[in-house]
Image (cartoon, rainbow, N blue to C red; front, top):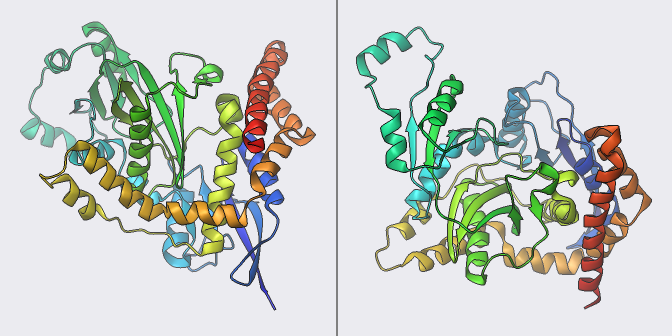
Length: 415
């Protein structure tokens, strides 16, 4: 007789309503999955924030986190859940706390990736600590911000060493803008980063072993930043972009992350790839939204059914051994890093398992996206996001893009 197991997926949420609704709807359509004589079913729950005993049980076996990068109470609960209860986390709060953008730059430079030149400058305003004044008077050397910027070259970017969502990021065109942005940075610790000539700005969203590379236009309004463009990179640049995104995630133990990369010909320059809460809103991803939710459900179900365990420790020495091998050129190193990433994400096993146990998921997602439930969700999000006089325009805009995905996905499934 087959055994049965019910798995609970916890959603740790902020103000979002669109993707959680979609995730819950698609998860219900997964149904039962039987593997190794065990029948698995799945539920989801939206987690609340409250005092917790360090020995309290945790009901959710897997938690998708959207809060811990800024809300510290649930972050510490996630750490307890992982260490005490063995809860599987998307993402690891341990490495996202310790390996912010600055550490991510340093690590990928160590691996030989083409990160643009970056300089960390001291705080503009004094740190709120009684020891700061005597320490800085004794040890902080004066520096010439204008000279540093001139050496990097204009235009350049000033951005916080941590954080996300374009918080505190400024494009600097000249010396006056440089000093104005630095004066406004206050107690934020800032990088100055050179830009590089580029033809395309790519954003790669990776969920487990799946990656979608999108044509990103940061100067556009949020609803129009992701262009529906399938061949906007050369084959070589496309492969390198996918590889870099997955390598970053495997190196830091992240499984739900986005990377931003500048692309010139076949050359790829990663500029931002520590995003603990990547954008999955229907009002920005639109065409790509169904893929993102499907990948998130698929990876969650795979992790639960196969009993995949959270890894708190990293394997940096394996990457550094490749980085230090004089017999490998840049492409060979990238391929070797990607092999480690594929091993960590069980890429080959994952796709074989999904083909065997979730063959119906593509059709179910397509069916849901064409349902009245999706239409109602989209209308609710548009009403909550845009002023009344613009709602009809934006609803038509997003419907048009999602309908394009429906056409393309239907054609793909018929081939």
